Length: 299
Image 1 (tube, rainbow, N blue to C red):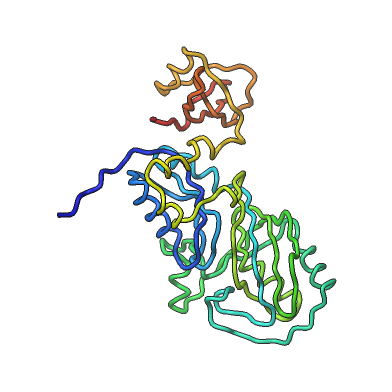
Image 2 (image 1 turned 90 degrees about the horizontal axis):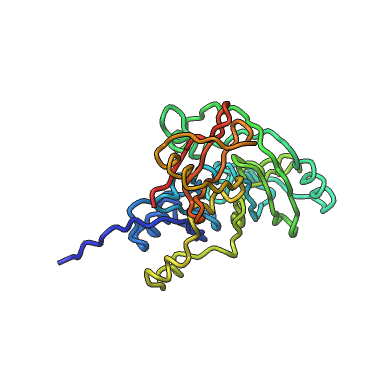
């Protein structure tokens, strides 16, 4: 007889190093199973072919996952010159092949020109929705949907290695950046075409890959060992201003009522703690100068 596992009301943030060949949702479900967690979610997906940083949220941490969606990210990518594919990466079919005659100085100049605020058209093979369906579902049916370009920011773009028709780059960028499209843009600027051969996310917001753990490593641990890897719920919002409330203010905030707090800018989002240092949630400063509870934790 199969024993049914009891789901745990566990809260925290796990920094997972996703391996290639699995979807972000599969990785999430495996971690959720290992933690026997009642509730879990991720903070933005990685394509199955991509590896690296995938923060996962359990319990109350899911209330704050959207704040990491807006965070800047850093990737290491391998770009193949001289060919284009249907998907912009190595999983697609080859569309064109051209000779590669590129010098290192020429390549460095192209990369420098892509730094800053640029426009990108999201690829058809993406999870963006159109009429309730992901774009990739249309792409697989051979249907092309018109997409509007949008502004993204490349903060830094470094050439790590270049040999023949292959280059390695490190990209620091804003949310919404598609590295596949960036690889294609590099190929267009060089006149030979290109696609993304491999991708690894090394950083998202304040979190670096050296803090992350793989699914096989999690498998080797017992529950206590896994729990010890979890970051606190408020780790997702550490860049927000921290405010410690007195006993009376804590009481009213927990009741869902706004409180007075001097010298705060209207619209500011604040991290709220009681006088014992326990995280309460986040509040927003109203036009009247009060702090209204915006999202509270139940721990």
